[in-house]
Length: 193
Ligand code: SF4
Ligand code: SF4
Image (cartoon, rainbow, N blue to C red; front, side, top):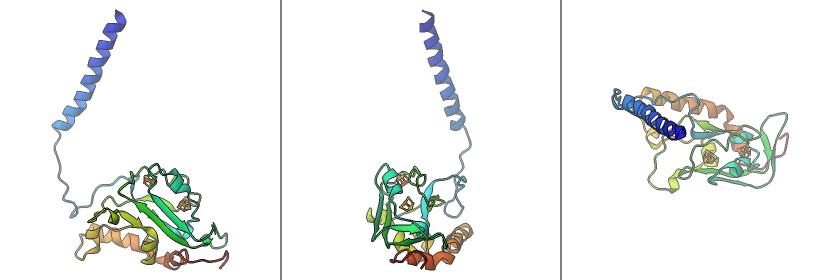
């Protein structure tokens, strides 16, 4: 009998706790953020669209195997390994590294097993497109432009808000010094060369 009343008490109590939180948000002041004029407030550990250091990728497929929805596509012409002197990968060409963002659920499970720590969750939360195909980001194609991460369509136009200009500059400055190495990742090369 005691157990019966204890269960009723617990049920009512947990419902009240849940309702208290709901009511708190119900009466909270709502704020409309004028995105994209105002930057979104992203937390430091935010899991946005990836950024990829192609020059460090050894095409080992560990990220693709860890992905629960099989949305990472990797093609290479031969084995690749890190050259100890230069710290970048050499060997077969990385012919394709792509992620299908129509399937990706931003779980970051692909980043954990990467032996060279070259795939990361980035700070972009917005990637629009006109069809499903445009949701497949070809990181090997981005590398040809010196980019490690995709840019939303609207950010490719002129007259951006200040925060977006700064974010864009940050991406370009990160990739630009590595551009030659990024291009080499797309071609066959030998260790030490
Ligand atoms: S974040 Fe998750 S779903 Fe997306 S590519 Fe990585 S492992 Fe796959
Ligand atoms: S990103 Fe990392 S885990 Fe994925 S293929 Fe390249 S080296 Fe391997």
